[in-house]
Amino acid sequence: CGTGNTIGKGGNGVTATGSYAFDSGFSIAAGLSSIATQDGILSKEGTDSYGIEAAYTADSYGLAVAYVSADGGTGAETTTWVINGTYTFDS
Image (cartoon, rainbow, N blue to C red):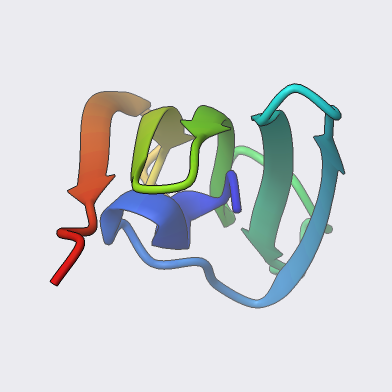
């Protein structure tokens, strides 16, 4: 749903997310995860991640593109892109 968990980066601490599904099968989601430190939430010393995901879902298949940025508490951000797909056979 657009958080670090979307691609296995792991959401931590407090997580806030939101999503919107359009009538055409498209959807978008975004989220933010943070572990508070004594310096506060979303500080350079804390473990923070945010992500966004765009998806299209039809009757028998779906496709999603996700992006996550995580710092792991080091202050140096890593970014990850992932494409996920699904297909359901008729039988």
